[in-house]
Image (cartoon, rainbow, N blue to C red; front, side):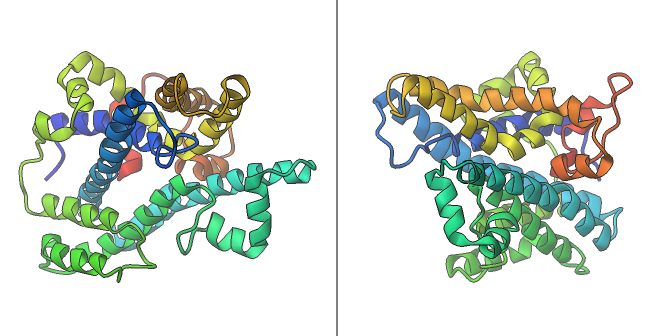
Length: 327
C-alpha cells in the first residue's frame, strides 16, 4: 500500500504548519511564566498549549506511518542508519553550534547567564547532555524533540520487524509504561513514541490513507488546508521546513537580542508582533540558507540538514521532497 497523491499533498501542507506551531513553543523568552496582556494570553494559549503540543503528536504519527511504509522495502539496518543521518546527526551539529554561540560571549570577556550556566557544567557534561543529549538535557530544548524522535524511530522499527505483530496491540503497553515513567531514559517524551507506533499501526491495518479535512489540523490550520492555493504555497516550504526547525532556536534567539535592544524585554504590547513574526523570519532565513548549503561539501550538507542535494537543474521534484525528512 502506498500513499496516494491526495495524502502526500496533505502531509506536505501539514508539516510546515506543524513546525510553525512547534516553533512558537520556543519563541523567546517563552510563553509560560511571563506576564502577558489578554490578546497574547489567548493567542499564546492556542498556539503554544494547544496547536504547538498537538503538532508534536501529528508529526510523530506521520513519521510512524512513513517508517512503516519504508520498512516494506528497507532493511532494519538501512532504516536505523537513515535515522542516524537524517535526525540525530543534524541534532548534534546544531546543538554544537548553539553551545558554541552561547559560550562565545564568555570567550570574549562578556559572559552571559547562558555562558555561565554552560561553563559551570564542564566540557564532559556539555558534550554528553547538551550536545549528544543522551539523558534529556540538551543545550537547546527544542532539539530534544529530535532526540526522542530518533529513539522512538529505532523502537518502532524494531517493533515493525516482529512477525505477525500489529503495532497497535502495543499501544496500551506503551501508555502504561509512560504513566509510570518506565520509558526513561530511552524516550523522555512518551507521546512521541505513542503516536509514532500509532502511525505505524494505522499503516499496517490497511486503512484508506485519506485524512478528512476536519481531522488534518485544528483551528486556523483547518482554514489553510481548505484553500488549495494557500495550501500549495505552504507546501512549497516543505523542502526548507526541516532546516527551519533545526536552526530556529539560533535564529529566534538572535532576533530576540535585537528586539530587546530596540523595544525592551517586556512580553506585553508589541511583543505579540515578535511572537507571531519570529517563526516566519526563521522560515525566511532557512529558505535563503538552503541554496547556499547546496554548495557545501556533502558531509557538511548531511550534518546541517540530514541529506545531500545537488543544485537544482530545474523544478526538481518539489512535491515529493516535502515529506522526505519525516520518513
